[in-house]
Length: 338
Image (cartoon, rainbow, N blue to C red; front, side, top):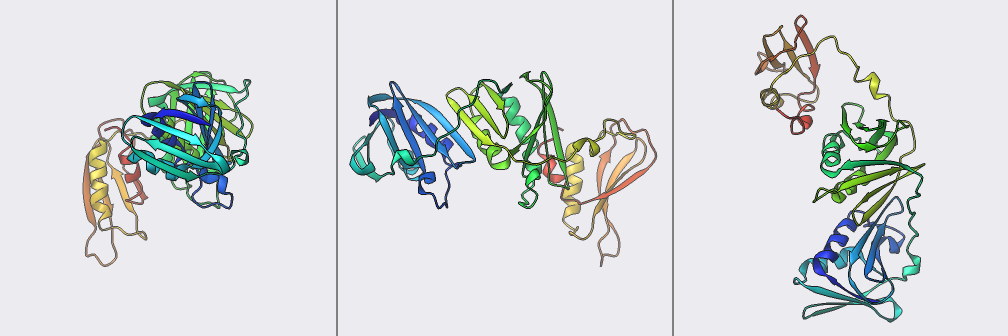
C-alpha cells in the first residue's frame, strides 16, 4: 500500500481517532488506526469496540491495500510535520514508512487483518437530521449533568428521544440535578428514547466542530450512527431504563418567577465561600420583591447574606424559601443565557 496525503487532511482524521483508541488494553490492535485505500480516497478507521469512527480522506493512491499504525504515535509525528504532502507506504512484515519533507520515519505496525470489523449503518433506521451548531448546543446544555458513577450505568449517558416528527429532546441527570433541552429538527418520528454513553457524546462533539453541515443521526437496536460529511460514527447504546424525567420537571408549576442570572450566580458564589458540604444555602423571595441567598454556618455569630437582586416578574405566590447546595447551581450558570 502507498498513498500521498496532505498533512492537514491526515491530521483531521487522526484528531478524530485520538479519543477513541484505547490507552490501556489487552488487545494491541485497538491502539491502532486502519488505513484502507481504494481509488482516490483513503478510509481512516478507529474503534474501541464500543465506539467506531470512519473518515474518508482525499489522497493520491499509488497502490491499494491496508495498513495499521499506532494512532497516538502517528498523530504526534504528524503534528510536527511541515505543511505539504505526506507519503505513507506499507513495507514487509507490517513495517510502515512515513515521509514528510526531508523527514523520514519507519514505524512498526500490526497485521491489518486483526483490526475489528466495524458495523455499517443499515438503510432502514430511524433518521433524524439536525444542524451541527444546534446539536452542539444541546450537548453543551446537558452533558454536565451526566453521572460519572459507574454503578448507575443508565445515568452514564445522555437520553436522546424523538418526541414527534421535527422535535428532538436530550436529557441527562446524575440523580441530584437534571438538564433537559428540546429543539426543532428535520425528520424523525415519535419513538422510544435511547441512552448514548458519555464517551460517545464527547467524541460526537469533535465531529460537530467546524462548518455548518447538518448531522444525520440513525437510531437502531442497541447501536446508533452519526453521519456528517466524510465522517461516519457508530455508538453502542447503554442498556437499561432511563428515569422518568417528567416526574422531576412537571408540565405545569404553581409558582414561577424570573430573575437575572448574573446577579443570582454572583450571590451564590459569595455564599459558597462560607458554605460547607454539610450546610445548604437557601433562596427566598417576597412577592415581586427582592430575593436573597442566605447561609447559616456553625460557629458564626450571624448568618451570611448575599443579596441577589429583584424578581423581574412572573411571581404569583406568597413568600417562598427553599434549601439547596450553594455550589450546585453554579454548574448551570455558564449554560443559561442572562
